[in-house]
Length: 398
View 1: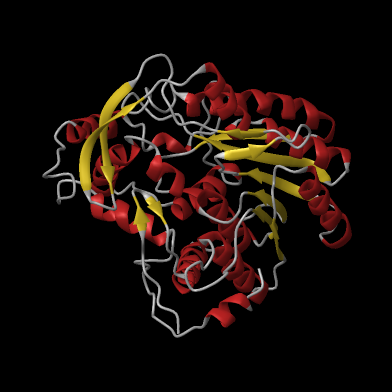
View 2: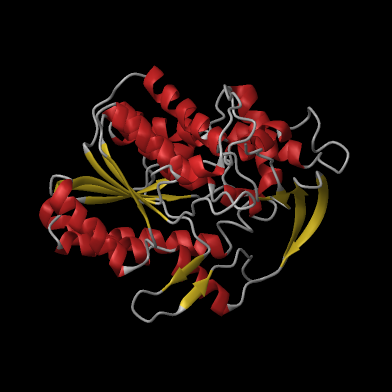
């Protein structure tokens, strides 16, 4: 029987608990079900559907709005006892199993979302087995590498500042240490490559392909997630390479709006809040901001996990009657995070942190670590250990 052990390299998770991943998905489903149903889309394509925002979006739309869903993600299944695959692989399986029990379609494509071939496979499935049209397309892809589908060139993103290096506090969850890190300034090439990987180009390519294939319903909506942050993290986020990539998404949203005009469609940028993801955990300095922010927001009753945030976004804002937009037309569910009082208290707390108190009751370090662990199936609420073999894991169908 397999034993599952949490392993870290810095702030990167190496181990996975497949059964814990399943329970985490079930916990998210139960959260949505407890909120009741809401009117929303019925045929949904989610690009980047296996974890964090994409998975939470899929769960909310399926179990809250009763949507049939297609999920596209690049994950890996189990090979041997030392390599059990990725958490997203098991999230996809758990979601499909639960959705099908409710009579919902839950098709998983485990493939390179950047490729033309994957786009065509998804289009063929929509035409042949998914009713022919989708009324919502969610782009929630998080990748550090992208292969250009036309040239074959591979690009790598770089999480760096722009203009001048940045020095600030960081934490290492593997060693449970607090230290000062220097974030170098990005070169012009690194900026361009980050935009190429994490910007809106592939989102636009998806929408062009779907439109040309005539698989978009009249009035179709497509959403993409951004993050702007505040003065506490602007220098390394909004003002860095990540910010340039997000700005490119804003530009591509305008292009997509024009593309969809004749079918009354719309592209909607959603400025999300800070949450614990595999990506946010490795962004320099960001975990320090999170352990302070989470403490403040927990005390205020406004802290959200991805499923809580996506539920609010789609139930109340996108398909509800409580949308909040900025002057650029972006949806702003990050309103609780950027609240002036919240930010003032967060800043005050960040300035107090050092190597002796960052993981104390002064902060929400334990909460951040638990949420990070949940992403790989560890420290999951309601989890009960079960016996399972490698062959049984390999027999699971995604």
